[in-house]
Length: 447
Image 1: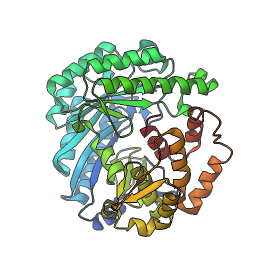
Image 2: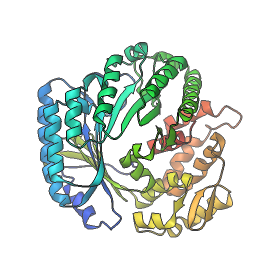
Image 3: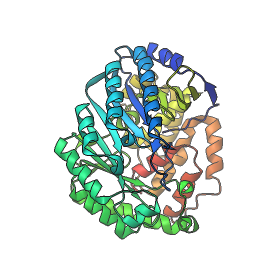
């Protein structure tokens, strides 16, 4: 998710902002619901996701009560407005007991109106998932299960402090398939501490044999977040080479097994497997309302908030930004240019004429041969190679205007050296970037 370049402030109540946004919605406005369950049983050494270690089961009870109160409040605001999807992420949502899962999902279902066939996605850790919880999830309408396997190598799992039984993984997959969730997604990470190319490929082949609908290949990106493995920090070029090799081999294997790439990191056997919330946000533009501690709320085109303290009451604290509209428009525009963006779609999303807002910049990109314009559609015209994409991002920074241009120029200056191997420079570049959006888009094209 993007991190806005705007002045941050504290708000004790998000409700007025949601009401204001709902009052301005158009027939094309689309809303998704994200619920964050921050609890984890252990602190995985590679993970930089927002989480807190669960110290007592009683804390989960209190937290779910708070989420139910927030569902009551937000449900009243939306009052019939259709929700396109629900995503429960973490943290580790599967740490919740079956009764708590049931209580939360029933409250959400009773307070919000979901679109027909809305996707309901639930993240799970194999160690805290069992048949009883799976049956509860299935009964309550979960139709996409995301299983965070990451690796099947015992040495790697020990290195990242992730207690996980391989037998439990197989049992979870078998039970989920027997219950037929509609979509089973398995996450794997490339470049973990202690991981070799051989062990990664072995894990991938064993997962493919389980025939999940989707496999997410996640490149370990945030090297600063890694704890307990100084070897990666000492020899980053060797790490990058190894990780690049893992991803390249994996993509060939997945293609051979009938998995087609979709989006940033997903390889799936059919379009039904895609994460509709992520897909909608990056491909069409939508608003996401977050619930719970650390949850982010993004209301297109100009509002962002992150919950910093949470009790499910009006005095909850939010760190929020009113995003500059041009920044929001540009952030949406850039990934679309890689696949092609229709001016009519842009207008439906933002009620703004794309060529009117960015005509000068788009004209410049066209003259440089970076983008082309045909039939009301703009798209990236260069080769999708590392060098071609670096040129693309170097030039598209003009879309952000002077403040961000100065910031990006500072990042680029003295950094990119064409005579050096690009793969050894990319991660250092991404590490300096403030906006995770750039990292996601660069990885999307397959380095």
